[in-house]
Length: 149
Image 1 (cartoon, rainbow, N blue to C red):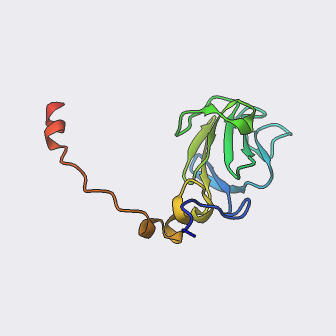
Image 2 (image 1 turned 60 degrees about the vertical axis):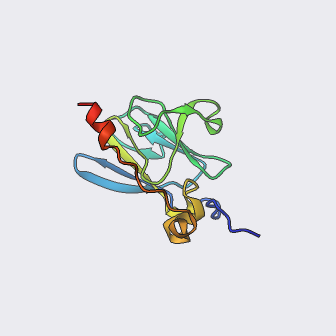
């Protein structure tokens, strides 16, 4: 039997959380549950001032992925695409380090590498670098870069 080439930790493993910041202050919120609503309203699980009552949500889907579904303007670090977990609404599968904004709030998703499904072999701690073949040397781009000038 060969070694697995993907990350498959137990359901919800890896301490999934958001680091939330604004005006030089920050705090962490654990992502517990299947649906986490972010907003200023009474129905929000993560309540923050200055944004829509429900500005966005994070859904923990049946593939053990955390999917951001924004409902208010903001920025993400990836192009939003229709997600099955969001009943076809546009969203983003969050990977460790993914950054997004809602209003003036900034959010960074964190999950330990061994449980982040986007990292093969359980991330660096699981042997990603030692089991994955090294990339070839970087080509010499100096000729092509000179053409742009």
